Length: 338
Image (cartoon, rainbow, N blue to C red; front, top):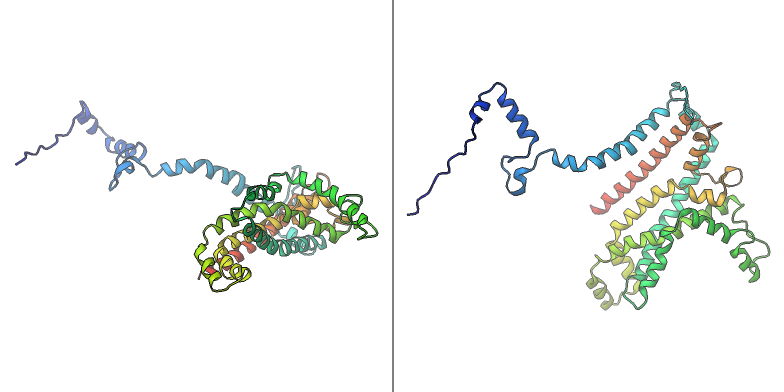
């Protein structure tokens, strides 16, 4: 038989006196809650893990989200019920008058139409075109890395730099009009930067061109999860490239398509730089191409005529529109999963 020894508890001199002192139990409870020590039912590293440690690691992110997200949102919501000025000063409560004014403002509805139209045209193209691009560059062919890098290069460029480049390309004496005139395809310059509809379409083209490479990476990652055996089996059964794409590739990357559609929709409703660079600071002739962010800048941030309260009300409307689009995308995603 092997004799077993019972470990004797280690006593610390003076511990009994401290334990019997008044309030010792409260001190022990506080020490257990704050200082690292064994947690009941835990083992390994969890023996010395306290409930507040995860909050300690996430505290910087929580503070940043509260300071730069929650507080500005609540402040904007509060300002929408006042007549505050952009540069500060006395502000009074005006109730729902800003929202009433917004509903009867023709310029607001014009900006809303432009933002919604932007999303309606850009989102389907941004969902489909990067997918086709990813399918083209997915295969490991000689020199394919060069094309992947070339397609991704516009993502790295600044929006302002890209906007200036497109100004030069689309100007009346720019490269596009000059080439079309020399090719005898047009008789006079196409007013890309002076016609309201052409400015809006040109801005959409700029958004598509700059975002293709970014969302191509999303699809390349999703295509890696599509089993190659399905394509091989379908090919052996006589399915062509178009049928394999529609019946195998698209269902395999549907979740990525939903994600791209949601991100693109939110970005389309928030577009500003493209309109500013191609339509100048007025947002096109007479402000006809202003989107909601552009309109918020004009009515809410002008230091002389601006009304921060009214601009905040329009910002809340933009938030509601964006939230509705996001919830719709989530609903479609859930229906697709079921």
